Figure 1 (spheres, one colour):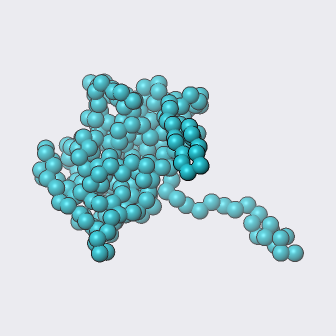
Figure 2 (cartoon, one colour; figure 1 turned 135 degrees about the vertical axis):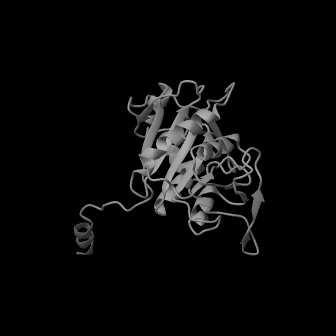
Figure 3 (cartoon, rainbow, N blue to C red; figure 1 turned 60 degrees about the vertical axis):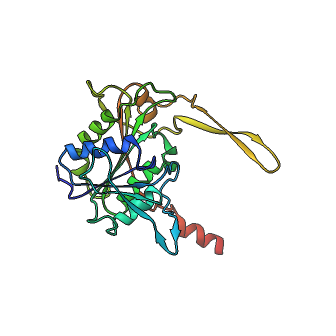
Length: 260
């Protein structure tokens, strides 16, 4: 594989997340040059937002020493993961990363609702800026008895040779079952389901308020989708595109007809 010169590890669960620490440790074990930069607090659902908390035009960045990762430069940033991924391309944390690993997220990121995920947003931001990106999530369920972060980290580093052999701008979304790493699950290429693991509905609508409810999805997903394959025990891999333009069919003719 083409070895990345510098790898940025980020997430949307915050710099103290054990999933982030496991992913960084896995990247180090794989011999990669790692820098950590993650939100100072949780930033879930932030998508690719590039918002940050400013003080007289300055973004606060705190250098940290993380237990077990003392040799790794680590920064707690008062901003979203998309913002962190974006400023990293401008040298905010040293050399520009050619790979961004985002995660390990607590909870699966499947279906088209990954649009809203801060974990995915950081990876997509890397891709749109000409790097490689991977969002990594662990399918924890609602009340897990144990969280196998190391399994997700090992699956992510195992996928790196494939990712780095793809063109610049390639972004992968990886979801890993919450299983013991003694027997790693099989990778499967997957499509995006039309819905996510949970669904949000409006439970109450008042004159000046709304109350939302969240429940497990009851929809049936196609067998080749990330939702279905993850439920079957596979580690799902989906290629996702950074934002790009789409073709507008017959645009000129339609506009001309309206003018006449």
